[in-house]
Image (cartoon, rainbow, N blue to C red; front, side, top):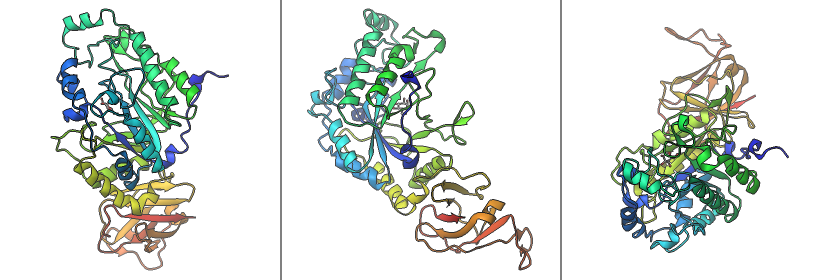
Length: 443
Ligand code: GLC
């Protein structure tokens, strides 16, 4: 039997589904000012629990509504924070008292969520933080722990702590997640950090040694062989099943050692992953759609995050964006699902992005700036392979001809066939759709 470290998950569905929902929900949702505010404000544990653990009562929580909003937006999978850096578990874990069932919520919040998203035919992903600012054996580090700047307290708290006992706890919770919720499709860890020169000093660095990552990975592969594992366990020989750029967009298809790899950008509506009441830098529907198209045009996925409130709802801003994306996806999801970057030889015209469905041999032109009458597709590949063109949203034909338009005199003499430019003639008025898409049928 080869070493389970060499084993990888099944990405065949992942690279077709392309679009997922990230959900960051926990006690930090009560604070409503970013999921890291416990660290940023260096809040002591007892105060954090007196405020947020004691008052966490998501009485409006209805996961069916969450799943419906995600499905209507065109999302095909979701990834939920089972436990974030604060250490609080959404499910009724036998390993801890720091869990939803012991708050005024008085119930397991994860199981009904998994059931609701599965009922919408969506695949299930668990985000699980390896960082834990609550656990009694987690070594208080000088990197991001809420007590990092109090050297005296740090020393006092670390006396008697055993990071390996925390690693045991981490593995036990992951085992619960992979044995009590049926088939799980993604395990999304977050994150290893610190000065790599100080490996093993858990106050300065936490990586594969702190999590016992290789042992953890082998356990995961034993329990759920097909599951996708991301790239944040600091495993030396395992890139993970997907690379996970966040809060920026890659310039092209993400590569490792010069080879394209499966990748998924995770992004937020506004900057914060957890609910942030007073954050006003919310991106609009057009920019969010552009980000989704950008990912697929480079052969990647988009995992777009929602931070539900402490009452257990998606707030109006999130619902507005999801509905707007869903309206576009209803007409144009054919240019997203089962698509990837365009083949060589097909260069995107100015102000456009291309995606391609290799099975159907269909090329999709996403037009971000409406041109004056013509869209010129330069390259022999267009001339030789395009057999039909239509708008995707209403299947109305788009006429084209092989004509070279000179810089000064418009169309050259009639009959002058260009073997390097295919010119589409577009309506004067842009169709009433956020980002119009033209579907090209290739020979
Ligand atoms: C960063 C943030 C973390 C968030 C994650 C999502 O690691 O620190 O709060 O959950 O990004 O990818």
